[in-house]
Length: 76
Image 1 (cartoon, one colour):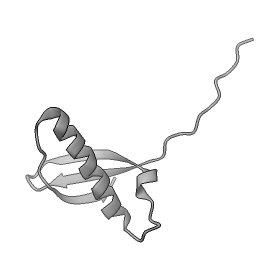
Image 2 (tube, helix red, strand yellow; image 1 turned 135 degrees about the vertical axis):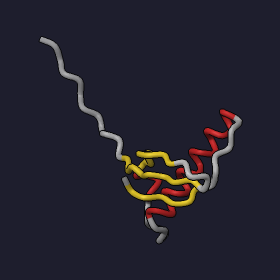
Image 3 (cartoon, rainbow, N blue to C red; image 1 turned 90 degrees about the vertical axis):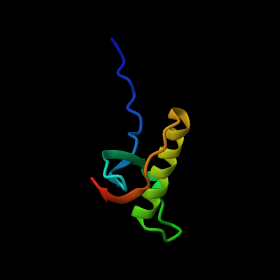
Image 4 (spheres, rainbow, N blue to C red; image 1 turned 60 degrees about the horizontal axis):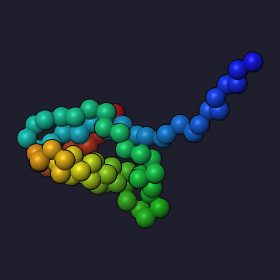
């Protein structure tokens, strides 16, 4: 009889839609809920903006193409 695989913890993410200053939009950007810890009093939008900027900087280093600055962030 075959054993079933144990179910692991599902990763907890929040989705955000990001609008950049040059008019481009990216939908459903995932940010880990671990990065959205509000224990220091920051808002979720500010924490998400920082996390997405870090993601964009990492992508820019790999691709040698900078992204425009973030204009607005909204929860998806």
